[in-house]
Structure formats: C-alpha cells, structure tokens
Image 1 (tube, each protein chain N blue to C red):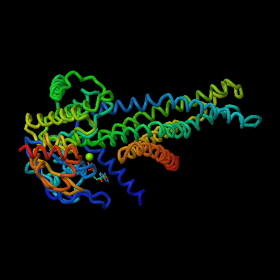
Image 2 (image 1 turned 90 degrees about the horizontal axis):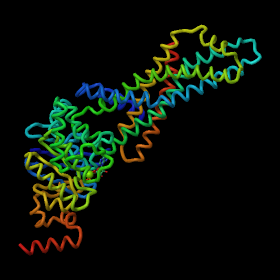
Image 3 (image 1 turned 60 degrees about the horizontal axis):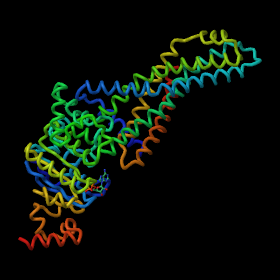
Image 4 (image 1 turned 30 degrees about the vertical axis):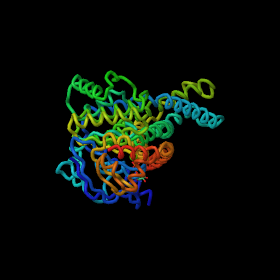
Length: 245
Length: 254
Ligand SMILES: Nc1ncnc2c1ncn2[C@@H]1O[C@H](COP(=O)(O)OP(=O)(O)O)[C@@H](O)[C@H]1O
Ligand SMILES: [Mg+2]
C-alpha cells in the first residue's frame, strides 16, 4: 500500500512540475547551472569508471579467447558492443545514481528542513517546477553526453590494456572496434541514457523534496534516493532491452 | 486585515488546532503566543496555505483564501512576506541575491532598480553594505534581518514572522522586535508574529491570542496580560518567581 502512496505522490510531484514557469529566464539559468553541476561535475568519475571497465573487459575477453580458434579482433568487437549496449549506459548510470542521486536528495532535503522550500512556496514560486524541473532537464541533456564519452573512453581503456599487455595486436583490436558496427546501437545507448537520467533525478528529487524531520532523515533520504534510483535504472534497463531489441 | 474562522487541523489523526477564530489588524503587531508545541507554527502555516486546513476559513480582507484555486492563491501570496524561524535563507546565494530573488522571479525591473530596492531594504533592517556577504557567515541576528529584508522586498501587505527572536540574545531580540514594529507602522501592513518570548509580549503585544494545547485559550493586549488571572496564561508568561514579583510590583505601582 505504501508503495502505491509513494508512486502516486511521485506522479503528483511530476504533474505540478509541469505548471507554467513564473519566469522562464530564471528557469533557464537554473537549468544551465544544473547542466554544469551534473555534466561537468560527474565527468571525472564517469571517465575513470568507464576507462577501467573497458580495460578490464578487454583483458578478460582476451584471456578467454587465448588459444581458441576465435580471431583476435573479436576482443575489440566485444569491448565495443558491450560498452555501447550495456556497460557505458548502465554501469555509468549506476555510478551517477550514487553521485547525483545523493546530491539532489540531500540538497532538497536540507532545503525542506530549513524551510527554504516553504519560503519559495510563500513567495508564490512553483517549487516542484523550479527545484525539480531543472534538475531533470539538466540530466536529460547532459547524461547522454556523459554516456557517449564513457563509451569512447571504455574502448580507449580496452586499447590501453591490450597495448600494455600485448595479448592482442593493436591493429587487430582496432579492426575489432570497426567490424559489424550497427549505428542503431548508438541510438539505443542514447535512449537508455535519457531514460536513466530522468529516473535518477526524478526519484532522488522525490526523496529529498518530501523529507520530514531533521538531519537524520536527510541522510536516510539520500540513501533511499541512491537505492531506489539504482533499482529503477536496472528495471528500466531490462524493460528497454525487451522493447528495443 | 486577516480573519480566521473555526480553524481545525490534525496530522494523522492527532488534532493540533481546535476551532481557532481570530482577527489580525492592519498597522498592528498581532501576536500568537504559546509554549513550544502549542501549535503556533502550524496555525501560521495554515493561514498562509502551506498546510491545508481540515475545516474553517481564512479571509484576506474580504477574500476567502481557503476557497481559492492555485492561481488565485498565488495572487495573495505575492502580497505576503514571511520571516521563517531559522531565516530560511537560500544557502547557495549571497545576501544581495537572497533579497533580490523575489524581484528576479516576479518583476520586470531593471537590474539597477532591483539593486536599489535591495539597498533600500538592507538599509531598512540596518544592514546597509552587507550585500556581498555569504549567508553562511552571518550571525543569528543578521540572518533574521536578511530574512526580514527579503520578506519586505516585494512591499507586502501582510507580514508573518515565526519566532523572530528565538535563538537571539535578549538585547538583539528587542532590536528585532522593534524593527518589526517600525516596519508594520511605516508600511501600514498586517503583521502576525509567533512568539514564546515574554519580552515581545510586553513590548509589542498589541493584539494577542494565546494558544494552549491547540486551543485559543485567551485573547487581549499587553496591558490586559498584566491583569489577567487566566491560570495557564499566567504560568506561561510569568514563569519564574522573579517575573511574578516584577508583575506584582508593577501592579502595586499603579
Ligand atoms: N508536519 C507535521 N506532521 C505531524 N505533526 C506535526 C507537524 N507539524 C507540527 N506537528 C505537531 O503539531 C504540534 C504543534 O507544533 P508547532 O506548531 O510546530 O508548535 P510551536 O507552537 O512550537 O510552533 C506539535 O505537537 C508537532 O509535533
Ligand atoms: Mg514553532
């Protein structure tokens, strides 16, 4: 029952968010700020994670294929497709759920507890619209860029790993990256990242926006934000995989 | 003027406000007093619509606020300024941007006009020149002043203050009380102040309602407080022996 209550209130929040902005200039400014926070702020962690995942995937794959009849360039091929289809969007978004999600929930939670949200409300500001909307917009715009960078760095990481270990000859790895390329995978990846960006920010905002109590509850809310947005990302990953392939 | 009629409010089955009626007058400092947890904040939040009432009506002038839709309420809210207990300043913005925020959001003034208005408000709360200070580095009293400056920047008709002098030393508390009183008179607005501070009651209590466990237990002004023989009111305001004696002395003098 509690679940339905939360889902209902989540959609009510999203509904209120769509009310007409008081002043679009202020909203744009806020969207830009969020784009910067989410995009630039998350770039280092996304870069690091994806580079190493790419490296590990290529080393593991090369090891599996050792002494088999499967040609070496399959390593590049496997790294590319697993980065594009799964690792870049999903793993990166799980990391983003941790970073952006806890950030958003604790920022909104603090604003709630210290009555800053009430203060905005009293001024006549549509608080869902002004506080939640730009975060979701910022994520929808920036997360796809992050994911594309992640996919690229993953393949680069794979290259660095094979270059360092000479398990596979470098030109073979490159050849693998280029064979049987399906442009459709890029669309798939971008669609996923838009959906994930939306889920992470909206779910985390929900947990922060409705905090009650004190500092302890802010901590709990940001944990919940991370847990539930990660679960939502994984569920959505599954659903999209069924729908889009 | 603001009038409330038969306000009832409960949370998850626990009733917090019982059938409260009152009217708050323009150009006066109207006080809602009572112990912590007596329902002052909840009452104010229902008056401004941050919390829905279970039953009862709130009138701003002649308009019934409780029956308004989102858009009509917004119109009233543009005329409300509120000082929150902790100031509720936006952490991410400096003093100037905090005060300017409502202007940015709701007016089409030029930047120069907005800055002039900010300076005027800062000056009004005796904080001229504090424009670029960070909200994090302000003292309690200064936070309240900035909160007041932000509350009056839209030139409201109604001003609400939730415990304006809680957490302040007695001297600063008096200064803030005086400031609120001056602003009320200067701008001829309806001011409603929540407080549990007996100094405020004696200094600026022009029209007082006393909440006790969510009931409106007494009403009057600061002079009547001295002479009241209402048991709960007495034990709330003249809590210490010292104050009891002081009161007796004042009454004997007259
Ligand atoms: N959002 C809420 N949910 C449930 N109970 C609340 C809420 N806000 C206040 N209360 C309860 O209402 C009572 C009055 O609180 P409040 O108005 O904050 O008192 P005060 O007079 O100190 O301002 C308290 O018992 C408090 O626990
Ligand atoms: Mg209170």
